[in-house]
Length: 180
Image (cartoon, rainbow, N blue to C red; front, side, top):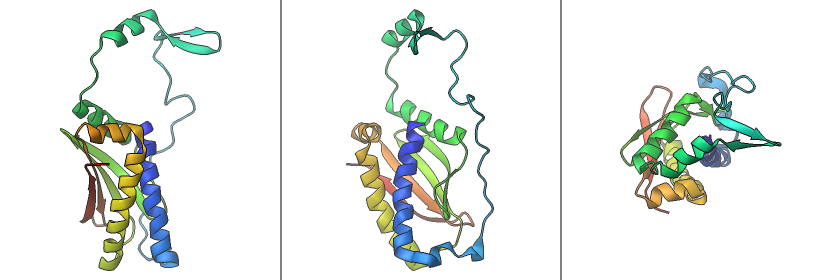
């Protein structure tokens, strides 16, 4: 969930820039694509703990003694494991509509790289794509470096990439971030 918020925040900055750059033309309905959003989870379905995994104490929930023992001896996940988990979390949530024009459709990881796929629902002119590439590179780096978890990933050697695609699936550009 935390990874989804990080990514959504970075891409919302990009969307705001697109509005500034292209104004009303950005939202013309001439090339509309239907929504592919997954249905929202039912109440209580998303974060419910497994039965008997935790004990309730007063108004707070505390881990059971056996879970505390496991946590103290469990090794810290490797960077590759953390990135793979981040990609799984994004994919489990289904597509994320970022604005009228963009949707994060998936994430993948390989070793020390995590890639977020972002699709535009409308065609872009070469000039618009070039402007968005510059804006995305700057805003994605700022958003990623402002968050502790992604700063840690990058400090550990991660490459966080946003790959942008047009409605036909053609890759327009990507913005890899390797340093803060």
